[in-house]
Image (cartoon, rainbow, N blue to C red; front, side, top):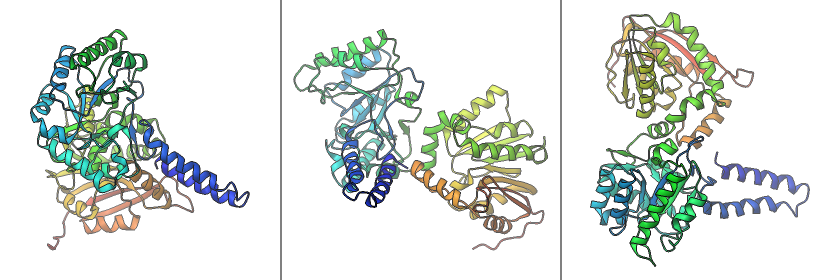
Length: 485
């Protein structure tokens, strides 16, 4: 839940409590909440209404340079030459209107290795005061313009860094996230550039996202702006601060090449962004409670489930938490995941261990060609993302050898799981599906599996029968021919 949700709920709870204690002070928590709602949008690093990337990842020692409001035919080409001179990559948050007017500059930005983000179409300073239709149109129009250059920005920077409660919904629809800044020149859109470099160099620190502008200055010559930029780049080097690409600093893709706006699966966008920190989250956060149980169940099954001659497919392999152990025991593993970035990390781990029997396929398992037959199919906390588990299992069964094994661990429907589903929906913008034991059994049976064994685990009590389901089943040796619907 966002801080706004938590603050609103807390304010209402305090209001109810105070009604019974001192009715005169009861409205104060609600007034404080309204004040927070009014002030928070103007604080660029405060993710009150939605998650905001305002600094680099913890431990990052570099800084990233970002330029807003362009492209500008007078400034941007000179800036690109200056960045080349210093061997620096930057991110340009462009407006759709200017990108459409200056296509050659956009192509030049991309050809020189820089990244591009969305900064709305018209750059209305108070865009966030307008309705959701205008907000959606401003973002979507810019995405459409930039798609013509073969890119789809994933990062959006609101004009003046101002946010509102509606922005989260629009960004989720487009598979985007919000990036603001932690250090700026206070140049008021290059209206005040006299001490630009000095202002930034005094304030900048490791991990900062620096906000600048690549538009013509209002009250000075362009050459003066270029000299300030040059002084800034030299000053950063003198301070020992490396200028790194924004995607490296924050650990998330700023844009992707190819495809169309809104086309990428939200799960792919989410996990591409999380990939760099995924293992740390899985092993050094409360998530480990679930992952530890899941891995313990997997280790118990490992000796009997896999053999040296097996050909295995793992659905939702991620960074290879389970894949590597499987690969050590079988002939070949096909690791499928919707996130390209996660699979790149898996391949790096496999290479480090000298494992050459892992084949990775990036894509949606529900629609891709599975290329069986496989001896074993498995999945670990990934089936919750599938839109139609029944249809998927029926198709998967055709790619498992008769007598082959299906083994998976997935979310069990329960009261405890409901809270996790709500939290995940707030974080990823996706509702992960949970299933009952009876439902899983019926799906497997109808899909051509037998010898079905299902157990429930973790947080079992009289209130809840657990939040994990572990299932093992065999592909029927004489599959029943299903009628074509």
